[in-house]
Length: 69
Image (cartoon, rainbow, N blue to C red; front, side, top):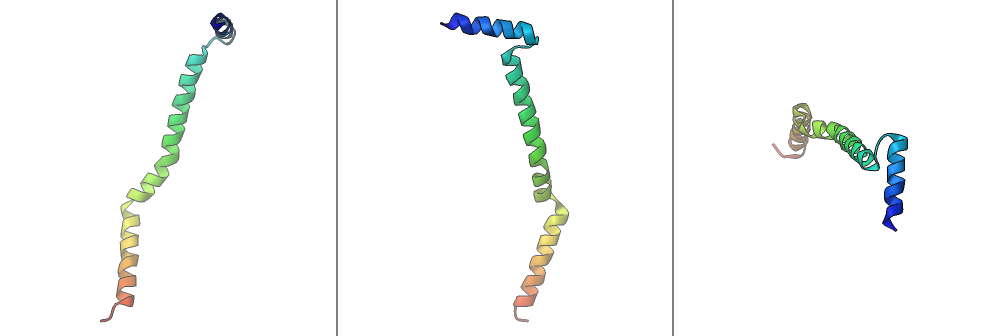
């Protein structure tokens, strides 16, 4: 039963020059690198001081406009 899978895996390794296990490792590495680069702009936007200053300035303007002096 299981011998057929090891036989096929061995032939694929000889034919491709790389094992299925190595392919999954490479695919996982590519996935994590892509995920890190896709999340990077969002984190930069959230942590940007200029963005925080713009938001706090806008909040101050709104507060001044709608509060009684």
